[in-house]
Image 1: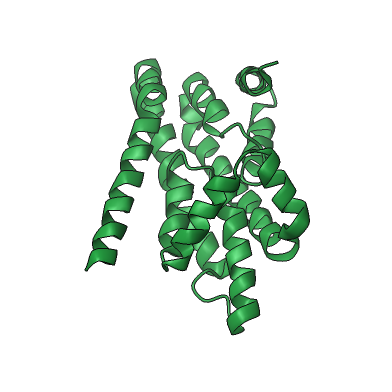
Image 2: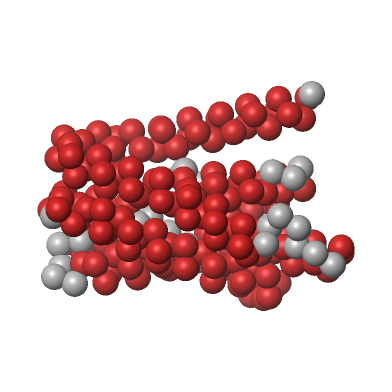
Length: 207
């Protein structure tokens, strides 16, 4: 059974519901913790249906997505092992999380938060990993360093805000044609940003 494809279609249908803003908030919140369906699935058709409310929908998405990420951060900080670790393994995000943790070790944590907030990298992985790394840092040094909750929230707001307001704004002014273009190219744009970040890190490491 293609459970994720089914959930994807369910979210698209919920975007047409009279209470779509509520469902958008719920989806955005839980996506930052464990849910596999990104907020864009609901945000894009809602902006297309009511372009005059597009920026409002984007604001709701940013706020609830960041709030969900804060929950993910503290889940990683307080109860990662064994409970959250098992969930990460079930979602097949273990390798992705180990990659993110290795990048944190190289002191690129703040950059990683932005990457997760703006690009197709699963934001839940960044949120939980940030909490885990913060807890490990506190245990070993007595301080969480740069990966404190204030920095996490600030960078998350910037990254999520850029992503969702850009998406909503383009659909608001470009209509159906822009929505189709975004659906086609959004992942390519996101992965292009990740490649640029990798190039930057490699450059810094080799200096």
